[in-house]
Image (cartoon, rainbow, N blue to C red; front, side):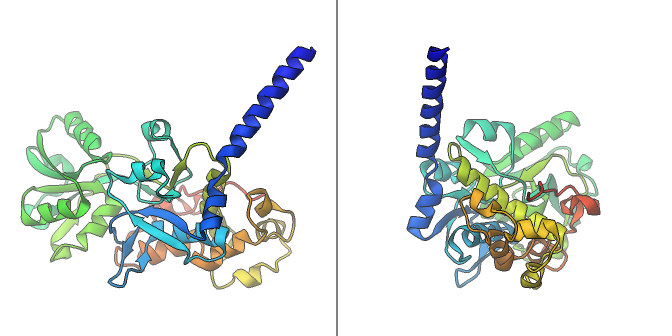
Length: 338
């Protein structure tokens, strides 16, 4: 019995030491005074800079929310623009602390990249963009079409599966960046541009006459997009995960950027827990009690961020759809803060 107990104790101690040794990201970010966040090279609605270098978008808001929770300042973010090909290497190497770049959660990515997805910021699916002049109304009419795609994405496999499944022929024309892909499509090098539907809406804004192009109705895949962090740092994983959950939870609780201070005075148990007036949930994350309030003050709740960046009030004008809260007909859902 003593030997078993000793072995267990030593194993537990070794595991605890290993876990402690890898829980460094929060300290690194605090010591640096800046969050390094990997984003796209320019995707309107998700992460794109203006002519002054100011970044905006749904993915950008996640970065700013993390900075608000950790550093009490949503401006303390270094945005690192990354191609689809380079994004995972940047995370693995430690160049960035978190990847918030319209990245699809898949089994292989969750297991083979030394990284973990922390949640879903946007439930998406792959679609097709065509010129109205082609008079195509369905993706099933695309037999023998040439299709522009971006390399390093899930797009190519989904495309192959769809065309094979429907006994259609096609020609792939692949490019390294999204800008190259959409330019090739606009110039007529291919008949169709395929990507996530949200990206098609965003890229359509870049062509000369957006109204002359249409997104076809078919959605051919599941593309849950979300942030990623490196394996081995459970504390940082929890912080990034619960930052997103705080945004979703705030919307469900009716907490907005405008009313956050007033709601913080509420006697409702769920609000008291969220705002840290009852318990120490923020401190359990390695943050301060006001972590939830910091996030909402910085970027608003999830619904506010969605509408501002990609919703009907934005240039993209994407309907909320399945990204609506679970109790309003969608599938956005956050575990309870308790």
